[in-house]
Image 1 (cartoon, rainbow, N blue to C red):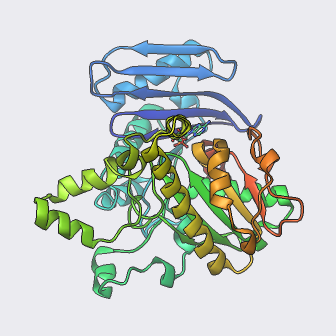
Image 2: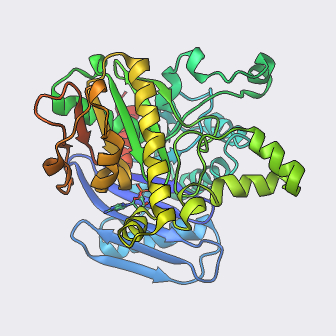
Length: 396
Ligand code: AMP
C-alpha cells in the first residue's frame, strides 16, 4: 500500500511517500517558494538519490505537477492516481473534527470554515487538498488534524475565563496543537515501557521551532500548553508563549501598535529570537559557549518555562509514568534536558548525565536507575503517524 503524506503551506508543500507494507519511507521532499521566481523542488529517495527542479512554480497545481515529475524520474510513481491514499496534515480541526477524516466536499468546507481560527494554515491546506483531489483522480484523501488528539481535554482545562458567551458564539477555547506528534511519541513510549496505552500517564514535551507540553492521562490528552492558536504556552523560536495580555494594551496605548503589528511582534519577533536575536537552538548553544549573556538568558528562560509546565502537569496527573522529550531541541539538546530536569527529584524525575549525553536517534531512556519517572527521548515522526492514521481510516 502506497500512501503519500502532504503538508501544504501557503508557499510550500512538504511530502513523504510511504510503502506501508514494508513500513518504509520511499521518498521525501519539498516544493518551496511557490509563487516566486526562485521556486525549488527536491525529492530524496530512501536510497539517498536526489532529484530536483529549479524553475518558477506559480501555483500549488504546478507544485504538485513538479513533484509528480520528480516521482516519475525517480521511478517510484508515474502518476498520483497510482497511490492508495493521500494523507493531509491539517492544523486546525476546531470542534468539528476529533478523528482522522475521509475528505469529501462537506469536510473540505468544514476545514475552510475554520480558517478564521487558523488563517495562516487552513486556507493553504484547502488549496493543497483541492489540487491533490484534482490531480490524483479518485484516490481517497484523508485529513489528519493537529488538534484532534486534544479533543479529550476536559472543559475545565479548555475553557478560558472569559464571558461564556464568547465560547458559544465564537468558539473561543483552548484547542492545542502538535497533537499528531504528542500522540505518536506517547504511544511509542508506552510500548517501550510495556505499559498498556490506556493506562499510561505522561508529560510529553515537543520542543522544536514550535514548542508545546501535553499532559496525557490513560492515553488521553487532558491538558496542553498551546491554546486557541499555537502562540500560548512555552517559549518558542520566535513566539512569546504565555504573557500577561495587559502588555498588549500597554504597547497599544504607549506606542500605537496595531493588531497586525502585535500579531507580528508576538509570532515572529519574540521567543528566543526576541531575547537574543537568534531562534536556532544550535546557534544559541554556540553563543552560550562564547559567553553571550543574552543567549544564556534566552536558554534559561526557555528551560524555566518548560520546568514550570512539568510541575503543573505533574500536579494535574498525580502519577507520571514518563517524561518525554521530542522535537529538534528535545531530541538533540542534552544541555537543555539537563536544565529542565535539574532539581525535579521531588517529582520523581532524575536523569543520568552519561546516557543523557548520548545521541538519541532511537527511543532512549535517560533516567537514573531507580527514578520513579522514566525520562525518555523519543524521536517524533509526524508523517509516519499521518500515514498510519490515513491507512486506519481506509481499512475501517
Ligand atoms: P524542529 O522544528 O523540530 O525541526 O526543531 C528545530 C529546532 O531544533 C531548532 O531550534 C534547531 O536549532 C534545534 N536543533 C536541531 N538539532 C539540534 C542539535 N543537535 N542541538 C540543539 N538543537 C538542535
